[in-house]
Length: 383
Ligand SMILES: Cc1cc2nc3c(=O)[nH]c(=O)nc-3n(C[C@H](O)[C@H](O)[C@H](O)COP(=O)(O)OP(=O)(O)OC[C@H]3O[C@@H](n4cnc5c(N)ncnc54)[C@H](O)[C@@H]3O)c2cc1C
Image (cartoon, rainbow, N blue to C red; front, top):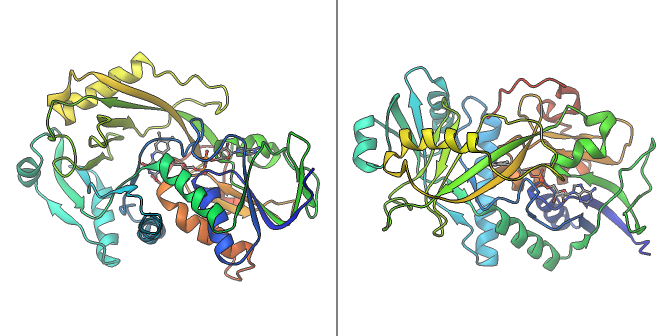
């Protein structure tokens, strides 16, 4: 039995929990990070090979600011640990005729002095002849954005956190109950751990841990991801092909990284999903839809072989804003999650933000991240 006392227990070593533990430790706290299955494991939302980091968020300036700072913090981490886990592929937004989002993004990027280029379809065709431009009227390139090698980045971060003093434990934590202040948590093995404050960053498991507060306020959905083999050569690897987003058609693609093949996925929310037992075999309908997108956007690959498929889950709040707030009945318990299909990139700033709140920052909770603003019906506005 371990009855040690910590300043903070962080439950969940996905991108949100790992960065939170790391940032808390850097402020001098004694921290233990606990995960049932390990950082970036296959069923976690952070467990995919790759995640896009882009600055464009339409008019949602707060997320552009967070992405900008997060990219710097990711880069700092990768420099410190000497691992190239960020691929600066560039991110190309493909804009339809009636599609205000890329234009709104451009306005925000201009305001924050983040570099971007507006491209005509002729320029896109000249630079990236692989891309089919049916229905596209213009494009915007973020040259400094790209892709984080997600699973490995979280693993490396946790190793670095341990090196700098965070304790790590692989155990499942039981849901806390009661009111007032939480004195300790109990693991399924019986081990009990106490701390001054507790952060639950349990991703898609949050509604199971806190059904009264979070059932339907965080809705895990099933998302399919496909990789396709490319023709020989480097025509579909960066820099020949950037990461691309067709926001209006709800589809995005990544170039061939590390020889895995190009990646393509639909961003529309799939059906409800159980992160423990949900079926992770991709469907023929999903493949057919993605192949139609492939034929439209990368026509040379329309019959390319599938090299890999994955099923992951988004953990959606009602509108896509994150959740970072105190538990309404436990005054030393923080609920952190709701990455909603776009959270990975923001891990470093989520960690900073939570760490400051745990330390008693008098800035309060950004209303967008509060529990109060999380409805039980989906109405997505943040992408
Ligand atoms: C297909 C797909 C594509 C995506 N694309 C992007 C993208 O391009 N860019 C981007 O920025 N974001 C993207 N996202 C979103 C992003 O990956 C997630 O928002 C983010 O990874 C969520 O991290 P998390 O730490 O909240 O959750 P998780 O990574 O799921 O971590 C939660 C952890 O908590 C642990 N846990 C849960 N319950 C317990 C318990 N009781 N005891 C102990 N441990 C527990 C779990 O084991 C898990 O490791 C995508 C997501 C998916 C699924």
